[in-house]
Length: 272
Image (cartoon, rainbow, N blue to C red; front, side, top):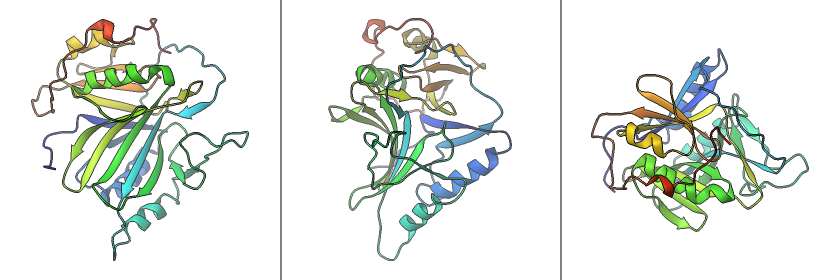
């Protein structure tokens, strides 16, 4: 696959507690430098929080982490890179993420024999998987409640202006960057009925968009300007989104047409 050019259409902003931003940024840079040094996906800041909205209270159903980051890596003879990545995740400031709830039940999609890690309870969970063929992958996954999944696909297709690749009936992904040996993906995963999403309050997805004026009226939730070039909103499950106006033609466009307003399910004013 030919290497893509231009800036990433998506970056992830992590909001750290005061005094911890530089440590977390350095931790992420050191981890990802040995995986994908050409991609700067994560930006850590501290002190400033996004605009908050009045949210409806969630029912006391099972909650599932709203975002994960999985690294699919090769283990090549003579290389200890996979081991070094796993080893770094087992040291501070990383923390092990429990795969069982308070009642001892295994969380769906989290295998009991696979470790997960996190830098903060309000940041994505991380995991590492070994692959034996194909490209290595950094996959950012948004977990969608059962009823919101199809609407979420249309929403992110509209924001990214590209079609999702449907791999299973409950899983799809977008390729944001690709070279001959590495791919960066944003994926959507549908949760079982009755399970709600626990959005990570300190994690914000930022997308570069060109037609912000056309996009804002089509969004399912209010979109509030926070600067002259950025607007904040949320998706159907409460994941925070920043839209950055981007004038350059280098942001990849793949011909997905603007959706008519009725194609995205309407929701009451205010966030879920």
